[in-house]
Image (tube, rainbow, N blue to C red; front, side, top):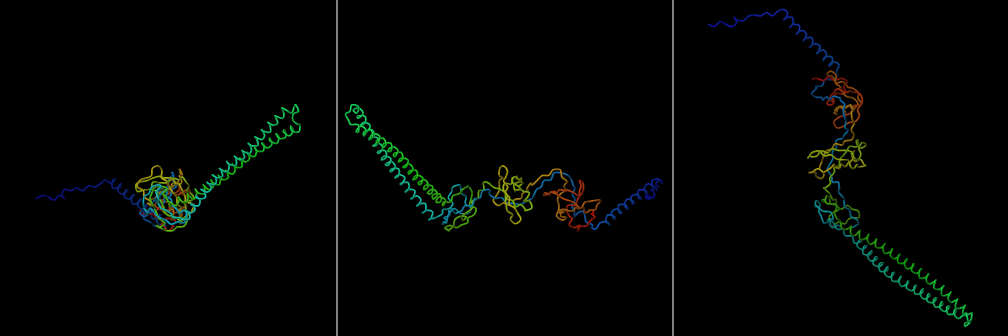
Length: 422
């Protein structure tokens, strides 16, 4: 029969020194546990509230570059979307429908305006009448010049005739063949003929200047009438509404055969070859915005960068509209009125004290923050500066390395000290 194994056990007695060491370790652990419990109890006893650590988020204060930015929404719009207007009261004959694709120069609508058509006919008739008058004046001018020249030539012939008579008298007057009085009359006739010839030449020159001035006056009247006729022709040509750019018909403001007033909008043409982003910026950022500001646009196909190219001067519903032009090549896959989000880069501040942004900025109004000290969140006065989407600048009240409760402070009820339970 096999003996029971308990008979083989031997009782070992530890030496006295080992028993003392084990007892000392147990006493030390108990003392440490009591001290930690006392510390935690003191902190809990001085706190007004107790919140679980899982309900808050803590961030560390550090130095770095703070980029002031703003997250905004917007939509893709056409950079060129002209609206076509009626130039005069007319009846509209539409040649296109909404959504039709057109090329530059295509006829979009014909406007019927009898008043403009009749005005053009009157201007053309007046122009042709003045043109005939100018031609007739040119003929009369040449005729008057010829008459004046004939008078001058006749006077010159009379002068030459009197001169030859005087020369004959000179040849015989020395020998006394003719009377002295006849000789003097011949000399007077030469002087008189010379005066008439001189006056005839001057009169012919003046007549020439007069007819040239008359022709110039008529020519100016003809030119003025030509400009008036060209303006009437231009207004009639504008009754044919043509596409100023390549694109498609976005909106039709009239129906076919509708009678419209002058300057009434007819349709909107959209050019999809050049697209921009129209951002809806909150009014609070309006003072910090300026042309040339950089922007990052988040698209379904990825991110794109752009430059602020236009800024609305008015505030509508607490928002300011801004236009962003894409840098380089336009991204593909964009659609008209497509909703996008963007980030406006307002300012970059290097080497500033900052902390991660959270709801504590709004909850405490940016004037207080809860700083962690030995498991207790202490309400501390602070002063903040610039803010961005992800960070906020700390001007006063905190230092680098401090741990701040950035989320979950709404449960603190503005208490001065809050115990954080792990």
